[in-house]
Amino acid sequence: MNDFREKVQNEILEIEKLHNKCSFDVSVRLGKTYCMLNIAKRFNRVIVSYPNEPIYNSWILDADKFGIDISNITFTTNISLNKHDLKQYDCLICDEFDTLSVNNLEYIVQNMPENVKMFSGTPPINGDKRWYINNFFPIVYVKKLDETIGHTSKDYRITVHLIDGKNTLLKLKSGKTWSEHNKIKWLEDKYYKTNNWNDMLILINAIKSSKAKFDYLKQLVKSNEREIIFVETKKQCDEIKLPSYYSDNKDSEENLIKFQSEEINKLVTINQLKASVTFNNLNRATVLHTYANYSKAQQKLARCLTYSENNVADLNILCLKATIDENWVRKSLKGFDSNKITFNNK
Image (cartoon, rainbow, N blue to C red; front, side, top):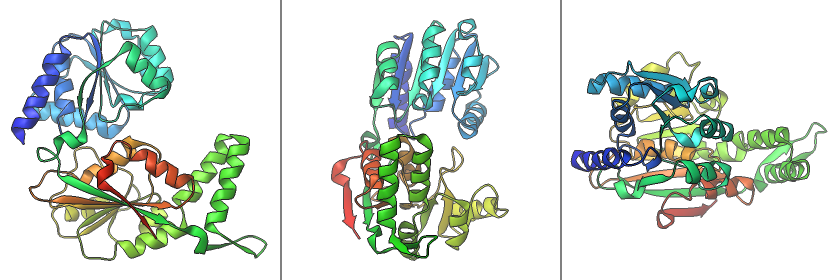
């Protein structure tokens, strides 16, 4: 496993030297941060752009772990990137460049330092962001998730549970009822007519808080099997009545430690946990909701992909059948091997 990771890292660091401005499409658990730290060592003044605090923390932890001096690095969030004069730096390194906005990319192009190095495991597939990457920071190295199976990641199978919301009845203020399926379709039609972002948010929230999906989830996770469960709200965390990890839960850190040590078999959480958090003997994840985004899907599902010989990760995703939710799920899984995905009608 270490030989494979080191081989990939050496390839990245050799190829990077040949291109002043380039991007790398590198999957999880291959040491992207380690590579970026080593790239930063070659320059006097470096600015690093990152999307969130866990990513920043991974830089600090890895710098300490590998004994790399980062006094030459200025760190900035993507949101604040446009406040910096990039031309004052020898190199810009963008961590998870798929999270950069089009405005970020436009600003980088207009204020280009001599060297720009971008890394992501889930680069944009198309659209304006992909256009900027192709034309200014072309991808020069690719190592996808399925290439790491048997080396740094275990194999996997994904089951998409297609849930029919027609039998779940919701009460209107008038006292009448309608099915959850009809409510979602009504919200979809409203959004398509208005193309209003607020209407899209209402639709997303309705799907995230779907009673049909949540009721099915509660039944699905009843086994004693070791499992991480991703929900969408603090209320759902509390209602599922299992040990949980989220910001306002005073028991979060204790639950996390117990789950890592295998003292408990279930952990419910919202979105992704801290960067660099890993779990032993974890082969099962259940996801209540995923967006039309491969990056978000991989971040959740990859928690179970730490390599262990002869094990296969059992990954479960719930979605509302014959709605926009199903379209989102299918799109989010396009980066995974279709031969390992089963759609299960419920």
